[in-house]
Image (cartoon, rainbow, N blue to C red; front, top):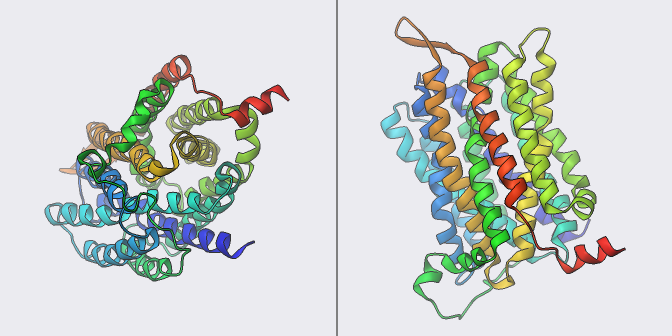
Length: 407
């Protein structure tokens, strides 16, 4: 492994270790320990979406124009570490929510920045990026195993773990390969300040459909991220955080074979397979149980490799292929705005409302949920988007894809 590739891989490990440490189990901590309602839990998860809506403007203006990417990453992670530690000490929704918004405003831009930094130092991202990004998945797995094995899911400790890792990541970013702004010295316009340079890509009909479809599918997807850990805890699955890392383990496999599938299937088929896997996952959750049918839960978790890689990673590669080099940072940020931003915000809000509507209340407190009914709702939503995407997404083949088809 080259020195640059090693540095990029370790960057991805730390980047996703931070997120995996607190994000998966926050719903259990808020529901079981702080006694937040489903709607409040959904809003807490929407903080990443609020931040993702701001990220494209920050990335498009700062990363593409004024400062080296590695320095921005260092600042955001060190500041974020302090904010996350503060979040871990708060116990009322009125204080917890705005503090978490502050943290996610620091963290979410780093997702697009680490991607654009990696792409900048690669000759063929479709082949090289999956091999680097897979270390991010391993980081998420390690975080989940630590939290699950130590039984920390209902405590604030995972947030403190994320805070420490964030400071470490910030210091490490100063050792990353120098990545200068791509548009240094370029005239600054109102549109560029707001990150609107990437909107020119929407003139391409296929790209516009891709963004719209990605946005719509992210609404039902957020049911999984916000409530799976709470669901598995409630139905009696042991060490849910550890069990959920099976999804990231499958993600490693599919990340490594992505170049093979990408070259042979193309972006549309990969995205459709990813969407179909989400539909299947929710139905497995709806009809499984923690007894004789617990294997349905495990199968649903193992589908995560296809769900994530064939949708999110394939989408990031597609954007990198379509965007001119000068606005790739803004383009990746724009995709994050549509998916992690608006899509996940609506998904978090609606998931919280649905979960709260199907709560079982005893003695004035939530004693459980009708999970079989809850999971059918995102399954239907994902299926509808899948059908629409099949009919309306018509991607233009790259020169490399056309030559491979002729061969």
